[in-house]
Image (cartoon, rainbow, N blue to C red):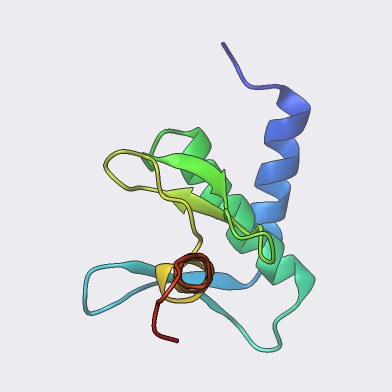
Length: 113
């Protein structure tokens, strides 16, 4: 089924407005670089370009929300099982796992702490 024409127009318009450029890293990954000064149009351009990749099927994965109650950022889950829970394991994931560990330690009688 074709995508709604107004939606296609909006996303293409936003993608074309910014001064963002895709940059290839030495590791072979695509990163976005915003030209100075960064502005809302540049950020929307990056978001729209990524959305085009998702909608067109160029990127395989699913859109998800971070499971952290203090974050709730959207991220693109490209894990094999599509069950990633946090936007970033080193920040939100680590905080949640540490909080769960500490809560379990408080519940366990005779635990060190």
